[in-house]
Length: 194
Figure 1 (spheres, rainbow, N blue to C red):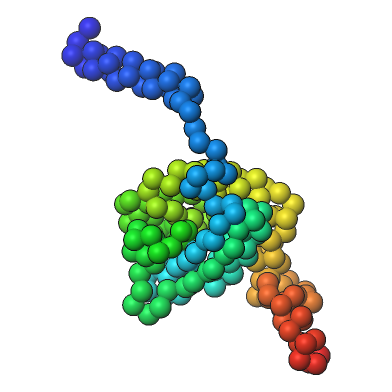
Figure 2 (cartoon, rainbow, N blue to C red; figure 1 turned 30 degrees about the vertical axis):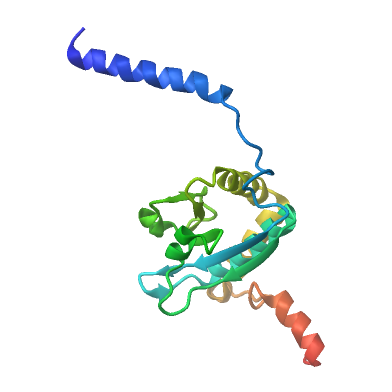
């Protein structure tokens, strides 16, 4: 066997040993230690892409997802968006944020962070490096919620139902003006508006 074959064999054996040992390692529960439940979480949404706020529906969608995540984990949530010269990636790295929603293209600059599975075609959630319980909890929740009935309804509310150009081109109309209709209707009643 040549030197190249020995190298492949050596790396292959090392990988096999790691695969055999890894399942035996003790893994902490996602609901103990550094996980989210029972605590206060400060999250940020930074979907600024190429200097433009191009993702209003993705922002609203992730805002709703974060609230559903907080309700399911029984923790308090504060969500912030970046100020004019504020960098929320730095805030996350410094520990002043616990979780950050970012554009998938921004994951190239996520050194020192752990990134979730994709939330939709454009976004992911990130936590500080070393917060394995948190990213595990996020990924487990996202996997279950996004495939659930409630997750599919939320996604439809933001990305499928509200597309006025498409409806008009098809000669159809809708009683839904935007994904935020329920909030407008609730507020208009309180104000006495039709």
